[in-house]
Image (cartoon, rainbow, N blue to C red; front, side, top):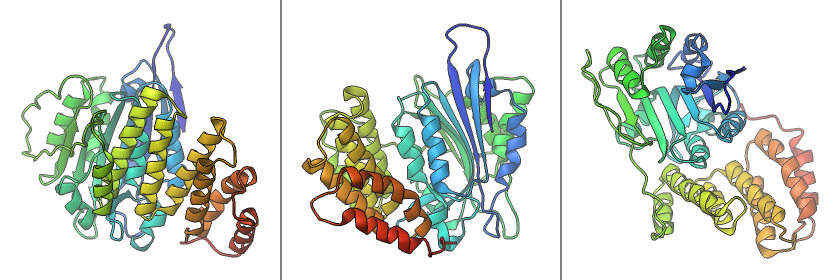
Length: 391
């Protein structure tokens, strides 16, 4: 659902609010995430964005992580302020030790294919201008993810304001409710418009539980004001900051060390931050921005995420072609070859089919040095037509 509200004033800044409520539609469900959407839908759109004109996009129990990524990417491309409201549940991928947001079809055995990797979201937000993005979270973490959250291994990256609650898993045979975000909605429906920091403090005091982690990180000018007294004593923990993108520092050793230690989300966030800096300083398609796009592509390979790596290598190749580089240029051929190799590593037939058309178009423009590359794509597509999608 998309709602646009505008007034009659001139030069009105339009904000965007993305409401994402997701949880498995099976016994893995830990939170009734979608129950908060009617409450938020009853709020004036301008309250959700803090702007006079607003666009609101609602995603209720989505099933496909690529679709969610596309909607996040579209919202992140909007020039005005962006506010993401996310409610759902976090899980930890045991193989890569990466946090994921569960979607409607997510089960413990299909997590890597049916859930949204958290670093996908933070990577998209890192490309926005600093201090134009706010994230409000009401999440439940499963047992393994809860340990990572409690250890400080969770956040949304630098330059993003963050307010939210992450709760431990509820007792067996019970389902949590997004009471933290419902408190926001209740206050807004009563006509009050306090700053988000004050909303956070009140919601933290009312929503509980006592062992939840409450996040308050103000990425914009100024600092979060002190919270008023809460009726429930709750511990507050700030998200771990990522090192600033200083021009006199070489970030590559830190990125490689994080990736080699299995902290793939941290490595991807640092690289995305430097890419954002390059985009602001040198522009899209610049050699500096292309370098960081390709670093992110290789980090996805190291994280054993061939689908994301394939997408990023294809984006790098397309950007080089758009700059006027010839199809037989070494850098262009290398980007397409690497995208092709990562595509061949995909074990999910549905994901492979989804990326095949884009890869084939690139191969027609960039056939590469090894004969038969385009034909190889065609053969695999034909073979995939008879393979069912992974559950």
